[in-house]
Length: 634
Image (cartoon, rainbow, N blue to C red; front, side, top):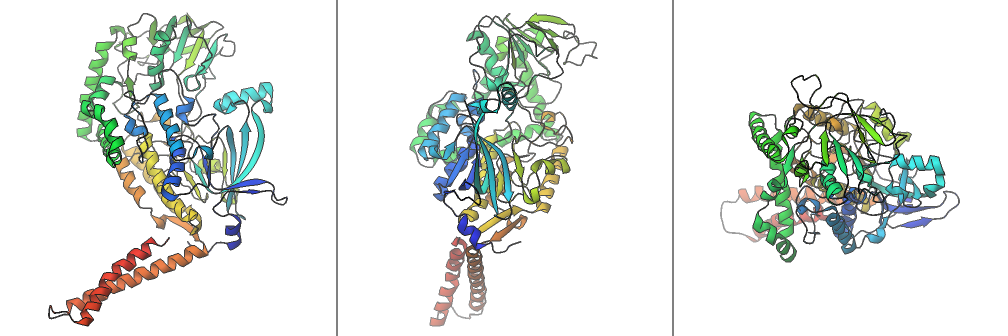
């Protein structure tokens, strides 16, 4: 669908930031592009708009008090990447200085800051700002956003903690004032890991505990951990990084780590062996001093990670490959930890069915007598202690041959650290998105049994709205950075006609969105990734997997190169319509010239060129030039 948009609205909402102070419509600031989220994705979009299009009329909003998204808020001890710095750098520049391998969280934050400074978008980022509502105004063909400004850096708190603070100290303890803005293009770059999980509500006594309880993703640096009895709930990636610091850096008296099920643990030596030693020495110099080396390196290495997809192919070859790697990892684990932990650290699921854990010193730490690993469940919390058991979470308590503890025990506790990471069972938007006809994003989710977006980025009924790392965008066990880059690349191709005043509205067709959603969920079922492969990423209500992408990111890269415009409804501006006619005319003339030239040249009986022949060949050759000119008209 295409039509010509209202000229008066285009005059009102152009491509420059403006402040509207009229009484009729109220006071608001208009931004041609509004970006929600100042993490890696939001920063990438801002830099690409400046670098590729020379466009700086945008604003990036973030609730936190610093840039970096998950890297800013998850500043727990020992936080680090689990891949090479290549997978956390930008495709358009090598932003890391010499770093440790793998890079630390502070390395990533420094990279983000230097990139913002280089492309001069620091002043385009507005922190401590909570986007509460995004509403499509049909009469204005514009998005209106309601912003609440945080007081006292309250944006760094979780939604649960902010609610508690408002209940105890009032609304003003969290928010200072409200603001309205408008935007032609709305981009959500908030990612999918936002709200940390809380201590399970069915565990009695958590409200009377006299010590501190906090989530590792909201680390309490003000809590003294020295000589403390610490309970850690969880054995995910974060825990394996920070637990050694509790003993060696903070001097905790004891650490009891509660594990629901064992992870597959990959030794750091195995990670480093994948990086050629010479490359580790020379990469930093080469990528910074030889033009083009960085882009080539980035493309080569990000493509190389796709080889791991063979680990979870449902073929016989994939099963054999998994079995071999599993045996190697189990052998490593058994050589590192006490024998009493061998059984509970042996997973009962295949490799790649859950996210792996990179081991720097966690397995070795389990030999320390001050550290206890258990699969006894947390049954109750008392004022100064916790009760574990009876029963166990792993292995199955019905397994009578298991020697794993199954009894009840009460142990002292001063601090409880939750490492159950983020809430991923539902779509993570903490703000309302209201599209055409007042339809809410949440209503679409309920109607369709879970939110699905076309290529993880667009939904019918929500014009000029693009989500980065939306539903089913991330490939499991592979850095989300590559998925983000692919969607950003596609989004910018779609946004460009809006910025260049060719289109006023762009919206995905419903049939295209539903088809993509159906094919994605069917592919997930086929790869058996709807069961133990990704159970923590499934909607509680519908059991749909809302987060994992079943396809190769290389394939997704190819899709992102060429937008399928037939999947989209769009409204031309008068300028865009004129350009469209010119393009089509030049392409038609060029094609006709080619056909006419071929027919006339094939009918020649001699190789001697006449003046007429010369002009025919010239016209034939010029047809390519006409086609190129038509293609470049934007």
